[in-house]
Amino acid sequence: MTLFVKRLAKSENGFTKEEFSMFKHENEDSSGLYCEKLNVSINGNHILKDVSLKIPKNKITCIVGPSGCGKSTLLKTFNRIIDMTEGVKISGKIMLGSENIADMSFNDLTEIRRRIGLVPQRPCPLPMSIYDNIAYGCRIHGITKRKDLNKIVVHYLNEVGLWNEVRNRLQTPATGLSIGQQQRLCLARSIAVEPEIILADEATSALDPVSSKIVEDLFVRLKEDYTIVMVTHTLRQALRIADYAIFIYMGKVVEEGPAKEVFENPQNELTKNYLLGVFS
Image (cartoon, rainbow, N blue to C red; front, side, top):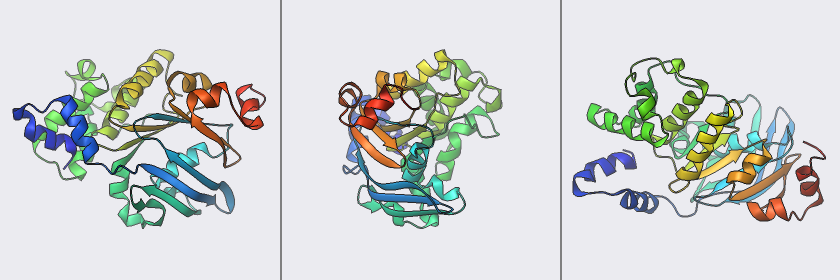
C-alpha cells in the first residue's frame, strides 16, 4: 500500500499536504542513498571505478561530465536497471538506508525499483490508456480498488500538470500524447508508487524548450517530497536547477559538492576545463 493510499484513508480527518509530507518522510529511512567503492564493468569494460558519493536528500543532484564517462551507467546502477545489460558485473556498495542494493539478487529488486524510480531519456508510455499508465504500478503493488485508483490517477496527473490537458480522454492511448506530455506522464507513473528517489536520465533532451521548462519546474517543486538525481548534458540546465553537483570523468568522481561551489569555484583542473568547454 502506498503512502498516498494511506493518506486517502485519513483524508476525511483533514490530512493536509504538510501533514502528508511529514508522514512521508517519517516513513522513509533517514540514511538516504550513497555508494562506496562502486565498480561496474560490462563485458570486461571497466566503466565505473571506485565511485564513492552520497546523494543529499530532498535536493536536486545533477551528474555532469563528457559523453561516455559513466553518468548514465551510474544512474542505472542505483536501482539495478543496469542488470538488464548483458555481461554486467557490479562490486562495492550501493546503500539505500541500511540495505546494500549491490548485494541483492535479481528477484529482490521489485521493491527497490519502487523506492527508486527512473524517468528515461525518451518518453516510454506503456501501450495502454493514459489512466492505465498511472494505475499500472499501483496494481502491481496491490492497489486494486477502483475508487483508490481513481484518486491516485487524478492526484498524480495534477502533480505533473497534466490533469486539465487529459481529463476528458483518460481512456485513450497514451501514445497519442505529445512528446512533452508523454514525458510528464512517465514522471507521473514513476511517482504514483511513492518512490523516495527519482532518477532522471537526460529527461528533457528529447523535449522542446517549453516542455523542458515545464519538466524542470516540476522537478524543483517535487524535491520537497522526493530526492532527485539527474544526468544532464546541458550545463545551463544544471546551473538553473541543481542544488548539488557531481562531475564524472572516465568513470571516476572528480569533484562533487554544492552546485554553486562546483560551478563557480571548481577545485579540480579537469572540472575547470570541462566547465570552460575544453572538452564535452
